[in-house]
Length: 309
Length: 309
Image (tube, rainbow over all chains, first blue to last red):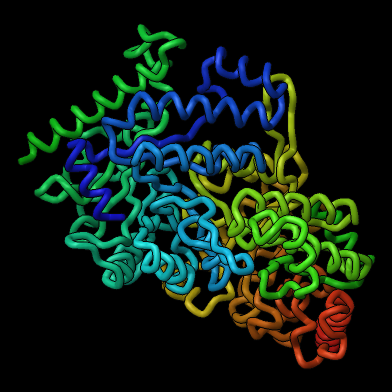
């Protein structure tokens, strides 16, 4: 799957990923209205609204981008119906041949991590039958529990030729509270990054490992160090746009070939129509605003990479 | 909710929690057979089987115990249908007046953590309506992202009078890989424990905070230190039984009043009928075997606490 991701990045010339993190407040009123007319102001209605919202954005952007990253929390908040909308979104993105990174940040111990890995990346056995459930191509994983929390994901990735991105240095303001604390003179995130590089040796693609890392766009200096520490790991970079990261900050997350990183924007793309820059599209044409925001993001990152080389 | 937990621990004299972590391999064949006859060897069939399994165990044990801890990974592996069985299990346990600790180990940043908190502990707004979705009483939370990943859970807990247990020192063999690393001369888990104590000050019950900690039964020395570091935090203790923890190891997780900790056993209770000690019950009477295992666990812990005082 890392090879597919790289191929699609090359084809689209866009090392970006659109974060499908639909808040109900982002969804244009005409969509929620239609959904509530059909299902009432229910969890089903909310799920229908976010699904229709996602579908329009995917339809308007899929030819420009290699990958999407649905954030499962935004679906889980609507319970079982929301989780169903998540699954539907993943399926639809597969139909559009997009690489799907499930932002699930799971992580547990032994057989429990194995169950998460099975549900999200693998196949579950029911009697004589086998089923892929959520079937993302990649999942994000939390490293706090150590190797035996991560290994079950790697084992499933080996079987399925899928991958994970392990949280190393997250984009939020208080990520440093534990991640920056010094251990033997170096911050915890470097120790985690080294482990990611080690874990990745088990499952190499041609040039990059199937085991990648999450490093926030909001910490470019840390990104520079981590790029060197994990030379074979793809870096998933959240925090671009709405959280403050800019293309020029991100050049050191990439290798010289323009690969090695994939930058996520969520709100900045899916709620673009609410920004002044894209207000002219209006609520009716929110998906076209998202397309324009994708084009601007690609140009920003491409420009930064060109300028750096 | 911490008050209800304490009241129920006092009533049952059992500071224990039954981990509802159903693997299909634990479910007696007559249950899976009936489920597959009704739904086929499908995800629905698997979900029905684990639900029937759970229900029988809850029916056989609810009067002995204060709380259950369903592990959502075991349900999520069966996709949307599995998640529905999780929800049904939570609801049923509420009907039986059990405190429900959702072992979800969620944790993300800002609005994303808020969405998880909303879905699991809070209420989500849909138009003019409000819904509780998964509606657990407590949830487990991963601290790797720092305060702004945890605070949204605390905010929802304040509104709902619910609680969380933050992962501090987990029970698995490689938990030390990051958690034991020394920062300013003290292991990371102590720093996390101190934060838990601080976070907990925001939301105190009568004697204990609504913000608790997870400390594995497999690390009793660490548990002793953490008990002192977090004097007002309830400790959720996984790793008893199948993972190796024994009652005698656990006395220091408790305060002198016999409160302050709640010990979880999953496999040791729900799959008791597969142990030699309970083999006489046979598959048909698996739930009675679970009841006997609960009684033995209560006696073990009570004996250890008596001996220590």
